[in-house]
Image (cartoon, rainbow, N blue to C red; front, side, top):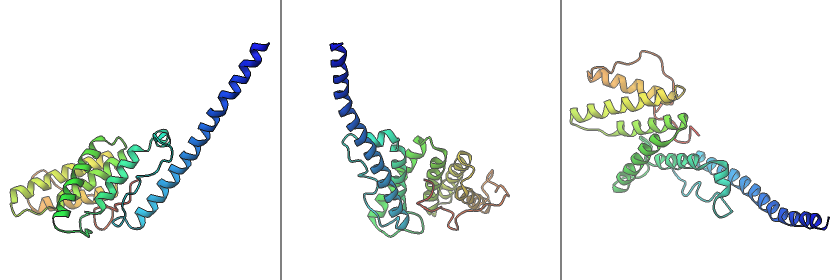
Length: 209
C-alpha cells in the first residue's frame, strides 16, 4: 500500500507541470487566433499601407500554438496577398526600380505558392493574381504579347478549374479570351457564358481567406 500511495503522489506532482503547460498552450492558441483576426482586419482596412502583418502571433517559443492550429499555409497565403497588394495592377502606389524589384518578387511568390498550396480556393486566387500581373505587362512585339496572353489564359483556366466558384478568375478569363479573339489567336474563343466578378477583373487583394 505504501508504494501505491507514493506512486499516486508522484503522479499528482507530475500532473501539475503538465496542467500548467496545457494552460499556457491554451492561452497561446487564443492569442494566435486573436492576433490573426486583428491583422486580417488591419489588412482589409488598408491593404497597401500595412507592414509586418502576421509576423508575431505566438507568445510561447517554438510556435506550438501555430503548429497545433496548422496556420502556416494560411500565413504564407496572407503574406503573399499583402505583397501583391503593393503592386496590384491599376492600384500601385510606388514607382521606379522599387516597383520593378517588388513585382519580380511577387511573381515568384505567386508562382511558388500556387504550385504548393493544396487549398483549391487559395490556389485559384493565387493563379488569378499571377495571370493579372502577366496581363499588365505591355509589349510592342506582337509575338511576345500573344505569348503572354496565351500563358495568362492557360493560368486563368487552371484557376477556374481549381475553383469554379472564383468569379474574378472567370471574369478575367472571359476578358482575356475576348482579347485573344480580337487578336485572332486560334483556339482561344470565349466560352460565351456570362461572368460576374469584381469590376477591375483582378479581385480584391484581401479576399479569398
